[in-house]
Structure formats: structure tokens, C-alpha cells
Amino acid sequence: MGQGVGLPVRNMIRVVQRNARVWWKYKVPSLVGNLGQPLLFLVAFGFGMGQKIQVIEGHSYLQFIAPGLAASAVMYSAAFEATYGSYTRLSTQSTFEGILMTPITVEELALGEVLWCALKGLLSGLVMIAVMPFFGLWPSPWTVALVPTLLVSGVLFGAMGLIMTALATNYDFFNYFISLIITPLFLFSGIFFAADTLPVPTRQLLRFVPLAPVVDLSRMLCYGELLPGWWLKVLVLVVAAVAASWLAAVLLRRRLIR
Figure (cartoon, rainbow, N blue to C red):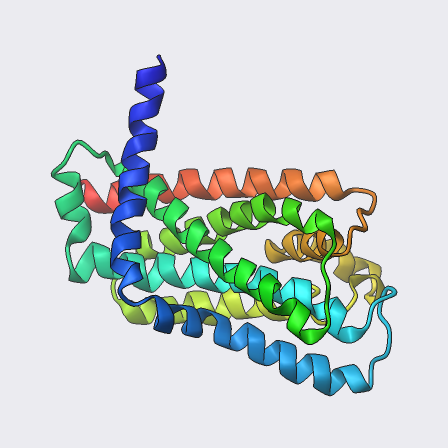
């Protein structure tokens, strides 16, 4: 039984290792591309609007938005890798076909891709957290618990991106995903405003926004302030990540096995 479970895990890790070796050659431009927008927003909004907005939920505006921007860095990095990166491996380079010539199955390939995207997203999120002290922000020891949280969120957004890859016919298809899903998530997940100030129907709607619980958990853990209902946010995040990964594997199998 142990060997039967261990083999798929090893195959998934092999997929991750293959992608990591390729990424390592281009790590600097990759990190700059993934972290450029969140860092610019941190500087522009934190120091710009932060002069006008004094305190939100007991924190300065810069302190308020920084954890959410770390969560958004995970989303952007995982989603972009699972779309443009995975589609290149699927279509342009035919890497997936080569991998499937080995004992690795479509499901192992899909989950390996999702895991790789999650790890890449986690790296971007951790870099954002690491630079926070340079802006005068000192996370609490609870930030350690943010690592698995960001990893699970990376799985969710990596799986969402792989779903789009399995459906895509060309690179232009991803413009819909980025413009209609990822960008609105970035803007309307509570990164830049307190959800408690919104009307009740809007607050209820935000509960179904995938990035919103990640932003809330990131803010709680960064400053060591666990609020009631935190466990429900964790549960929603885990369930969504598992469901999206399952759907990504199903759709990728449909795309590859004809």
C-alpha cells in the first residue's frame, strides 16, 4: 500500500524537479516579473494613499495592504505559471507528450504541474513578506503558519490556471482569464479596503471570492490576530484547492487523451 501511494508522489515530484531545473536558468527575470506589480502597489498605495488614510482596523494603511499584496503575489505567480508556462509545455514544446511517454500518468502530471505552480507562488509570497521589514513592517511569529496557507492558495490558483490551459486553444485565450478573473480578484478581495465597511450583501458576496479568505488569513497571521471564523476560511480554501485540482486533472486528461 505504501509503495502504491509513494510512486504517484515521486512521479509528481519528478515533474516539479523538471520544471524547477528549467526555471532556475531564468529565475531572476521570472521573480522580477511576478513581484514587480505587488511591490509597486505596496510603494504607490502604501506611501501615497497611506498619507491620507491613517488607520484601518488598528493598522496603518501600509500595514493593512502589505499582507494582502503578499497573498496576491502568490496568486499572480501561480496563475501565470499554470497558464502561459504550462500551455507552452503542453502545446509549443510538447513537453507533456514527452513526459507521458514515461510511467507518469496524466493525473500525476497535472498534480505535479499544480504543485510546481504552488511552490513558485509560495516563493513569490515569501519574498514579499521578507521585504516587509524594509518598509517598517514587522510580522509576528504567527507568520510561520502563513507558509502552508500560501502554499494551499498557490495550489488553488495553480489549478485554476491549469483548468484554463486545458481549455485554451491559443495564448490569447488567457486574456479572458487574466482580465475577467485574476485582475478583479486582485482589486475586490479586500486587499485595499476593509470588507467590514461594505454593505452586507457585498460582504456576503466576497465570501465566494477565492482570494478573499487568503487575504484575511494573511493579515491575521502576519500580525498574530486570529479572528473568529478563521478555521472556516481555512476549510473553504482547502476544499476549493482540492476541487480545482481534481477538475484540472480531469480536463487535462480530456485534452491529452483523445
